Amino acid sequence: MSEKPCRFYLRMPQCMKDDLVAASRQNGRSLNSEIVARLHEALRSDEVNRIQWALDHANHWEYSKPGQLTLSMLAEQAGERSAVQLEAIMNGRERPTFALLDALSSALKVNPDWLKHGVGAPFQTGSP
View 1 (cartoon, rainbow, N blue to C red):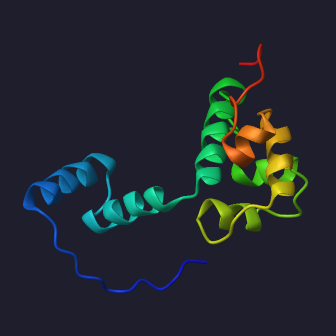
View 2: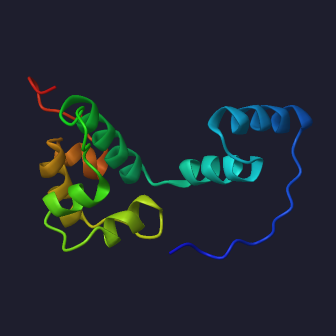
């Protein structure tokens, strides 16, 4: 469920607009979609960035075959009844609880202190 978009006028240097236009073409999206995607990424919480990094890492190392680990699969492995809350967290509409972060760290096989607080390394010594 997405929010109704609102109109917002923005002034920016021409060279920045040119760079965004080039990036939007490279990414196959409109200029507006490029700006929204970049703002969304910039505003994500540190925990969400770490969840996304760990999910990307798991997909690279453990799920590199068809059927990569999706958000719904991750939510299920973390003991959630559905993917709704995790999707809301990843989209910046909710903040994760420590209990959910602990469950996600177990499912993603990462250091819980790193996932929750950004403390230490993502993996214990000897892990991938």
